Image (cartoon, rainbow, N blue to C red):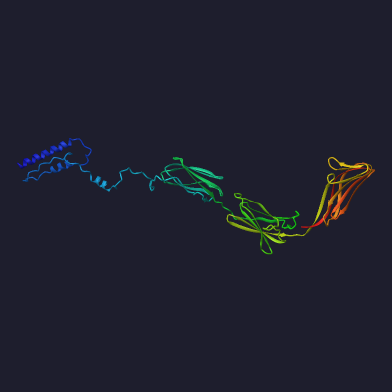
Length: 419
């Protein structure tokens, strides 16, 4: 009887397994269900010869019997999620760079208001987003541009642009081709300077006479060559005391980076505007370029004394004369210019010209320039005489039958004057 019961159970189990094989696969075929587990457990054959009756198989639980428990992993995930946070898809970010909505385009190098060395311009900027950027450089004499592509927001891009020249003022502009926003910085290119030089320093004249303002060597010019973009300072130092009596400066002419002749005039006056004493002086010339200076010196001599002047004074024949006539004679203006002295048979016609002559004048002499017009029966008289301590008069007279045109009268003399 026991053998018969075991045989029946085994047949029932085999039929169940066969029927399960004919059932369509569900979405959870890969995961064994509780029912299958239960059947497999019940299908274990009892040991042969046992007195205990075989247990009756329990039916598999249905959805109405009990709720299907959630997988353990889901429960664990739900417990570890921080309170208040909902499930969201992960944001894709580039390696080593945390994506941030606040990232903006920013030029890192060069900085605004900075000074950069001459040569190829190095740049660096942070991209606010991925995409193309237009980078343009504008300077006084240099222009360049380039396209740059950013792979992700926050990426730092670097490179070089065309060479910039010393002393240029530049602007670097960055344009985001996605948003059309622009950023720009302005900067200056550093100037590089050689050692300053003062070439061919001299004074012309080295001896001058400023104490008498008569136009004769009243000043000297200190001449030299230097770069025009160097600042120059000239100190006039009295040799006997070492004291600076005058300071003259010439400003640098920016961007004029070549050598050229320069000169500074000194009229012999001090900084206070007074004429300096006679004696020896030194012009100390200092040229400053790029923070470095060079100094040179030239000797000067402020002097006074006397010199002989050779003076010539001229009077116009018509406009500068004082005329007198007598008898059948007269004077008139002669075209194109001159004083027409004309006598017709008696008395005289005279023109006088008076000159001022300084004290001490020597070798006084005169000269009358004119033209004979008529007749030889009369006389032409030209004479000069002193009419005062500082006045000299020249007279031109015709008499009887004579005509003469006075065009101009000159007086010459020599005088020794202080300078």
